Length: 172
Figure 1 (cartoon, one colour):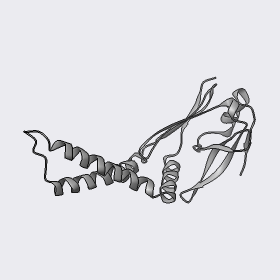
Figure 2: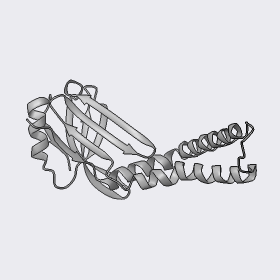
Figure 3: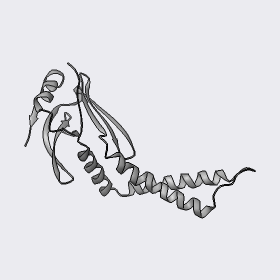
Figure 4: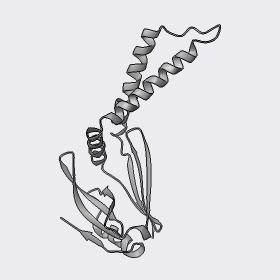
């Protein structure tokens, strides 16, 4: 059976990212601080040597501050406009490759680790999305992966019945 794959709706991934940012605003601020310090350290190293002519410190501090804010806030926001999450169901399990914010997240759940799967509604950013929720044997939620409207639950159920341990539950 050919792997089943889809891109999660970009609006869902954006809403989840911004909810995480609101719950932990120091995450991006810390990243900006580290980027700022790294740029100043590079400036300090550039002033050594007989032919070194780095810009003055006030200009360097201003440029480092602006670049740190761009790297910590603007670039992740721009990256979230692209479809940055792909879900792949294969004979080995469920794979989710996500480019969100400042980096990649590659997650994988083997079929033997997934005890139950359900299509459940999930509200993100004031909108409700259909998600494929994966659960382990203890009932813990492994992931919620948004499903585009064009994808039918029967296609996912066919994969689960062939490779997975359980049938797909549909919750409204």
